[in-house]
Image (cartoon, rainbow, N blue to C red):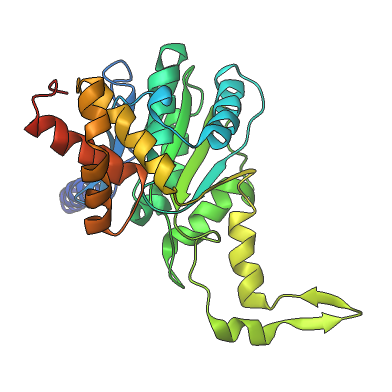
Length: 290
């Protein structure tokens, strides 16, 4: 009996040591500590880290994307009010305000219970754990994945499909997924995939590879497309930000040529480039600190 007792104690000690090595369920964060959180992995364990200083951009600061702004704000307002709403995919030209629009929604609706959880695409396999953490909470959560795209065989691809629409378990009503991407179908498209297309009875039937890519993006109920800005739109955005940085109206008018030269050197006329120009110009000419 003494030998049996010692064996049992050794087995219990071994199990305790093994339990410390196994992944533990993610602990809930202090929900009152922040309105934005990041999902981070440490030692194989995921956790929601509060964001102490979220990017507080306002909806009115985003120019020349009025239709996209109207549609995503309406969807988010429905969500915050406890009504039905859709997951959102924002695609198109870089620097046109896709991710800034999502951040501005947090600024607008945080006071009404909206919370933002940023997840890197490599951590999308942990989406079920995140869903378990927020299920039953009174807040409304947007899971945000910026610059989302997949290569063939990436593990996060199937996890995302299941959360959007395709798992046995339903997604809680207090969570939506907003994603931005430069790719409309989130995956690379190749010329040889067109060879798989078949014509049946006069109808075009895409091949399996194309259908697989379309099936993911179709799981987002709301698509918003963003397009490159023309010169007038770029200058208008630059003028707006110059004004926000305290540059006088006369100086803003005089900055037109420098703004165009800045865009020419960068090879782009995007909202991001306009904002970067305004920061540089205001810093040189005594604009307000922001």
